[in-house]
Figure: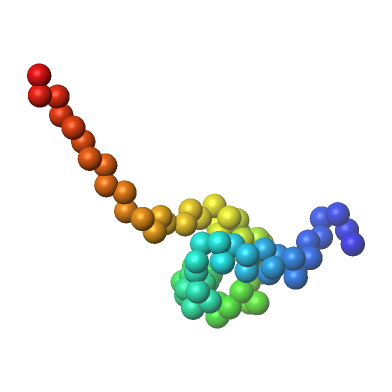
Length: 77
């Protein structure tokens, strides 16, 4: 395999791992792909689009499940 060649199955595996990490369902991923790339699934993405999608997922910060409320104290002096 050429050093510039990336294994498709490895990319799909990484995408699956990132989707789990951020808690996206298959439906949410498909909706994102349809909206941003205009195709029905990741199988229809071009190589550069597939890598772009993976990069997007890696950069995506999972929203916190907990809402933190900070209690502020004011000086009363």
